Figure 1 (cartoon, rainbow, N blue to C red):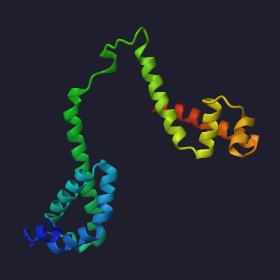
Figure 2 (figure 1 turned 90 degrees about the vertical axis):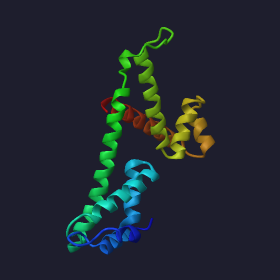
Figure 3 (figure 1 turned 180 degrees about the vertical axis):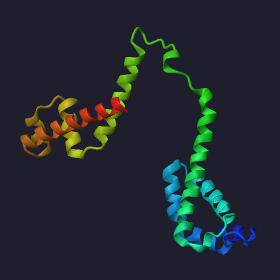
Figure 4 (figure 1 turned 135 degrees about the vertical axis):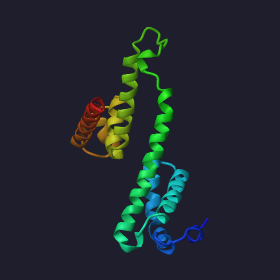
Length: 185
C-alpha cells in the first residue's frame, strides 16, 4: 500500500500532517530501508519495520514543525522497533539455550573443548586470509600448503624473494593478531 494512501486514513488534527509524514518517507525511504536491511539483515523484516515506523509517525504530535527533528525521530523510531523485535526474538530463544558443558559428545577420546577451539581458530584464520590482498594470500598458501620455498614462490608470481618474505610475514602477523582478538572476544 502506498504511503500517501495510508496517510489519508489518519486524521491530522493535533498530530503530524499526513502529507508531511508521507513526504518525509518518500524523501528518506531509500536511506532508511538500506539502514534497516543492514541492521536486521532481512529485506522483508526491514520493510515491516519501515511500515511500522510510518504508522507511529502518523500518531506523533507536531512532527511537521521541525524537519531535522522529524528525520531524526523517523530513524530513531525505526531503530527502536528493530531493537524491540530483536529482544522479542532473543527472549523466545532463551529456553533453547543449552550450555556446551552439559552436552555429551562422543569425540573418540578427544577433548570437545579443544576441538571447538580449533574449529573457531580455523574460522578466524579463514576470515583473516579472505581479507588479504590476492598476491599476499597466494604467497602464503603456496608456502604453507604447497611447501614451496620463497624463491620458488617469487619465480611463480613474478616478484622478488624479499616481497614474498614480507607477504608471508604480513600474513602471519595478521593471523596472529586475529587469533589474539578472537581469544579476547
